[in-house]
Amino acid sequence: MSDRTAAAEKRRTQAIAGGLTGAFVVLALVIVYFVVRAGDDDEQPAPTSIATTSAAATSTTAVEPAPPPAESVAPLAGNPSLPPELAKEPEIQPGTGGPLTKLEITELVKGTGPVVKSGQTVTFNYKLIPYKGGDVIDSSWSRGEPFTSPIGAGQLIQGWDQGIPGQRVGSRIQLDVPAALAYKDQDLRFVIDILSAR
Image (cartoon, rainbow, N blue to C red; front, side, top):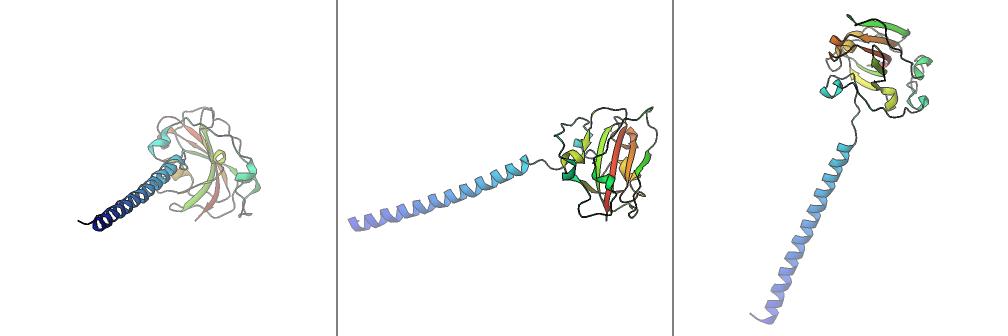
């Protein structure tokens, strides 16, 4: 083999090696990009709610972040037909007596919107404590965003699926839920604002 042929062969081998190395670098960068991106998605907490029926929701302990100013979560934005009382986070007091034997609904603010029907997707603000009292277990107010879910479709606790249909949009209700219609471990008290139904 002549020197010229050997040099050409060496350059071709180097070019192939360089091309393969470049391809591997690009492949490695693509893999790193997707791994990092998937890791970022895992680190972002999905909105959760104590009202859902998932196993994770059965916990009655919550680390509650400092609540944002009430103005930042006011549900009235874009819906001036809602009562002004729903713009302010409600106070919630423990119940007396018990244990609860049935679902109890108390209207705190009378809504004038349409009646909520099973199967609709409803948006709420809510706050939850143990019926007998204690720290707030869960609150859409503390997360700074309302909670939206189908109602009467088995995606929420039975107390919500039974207690929300028939209420009017714009209502603030107190929902006292016996353990049998919640997570079986204790009676619960919710204050729920019904912001919309569609």
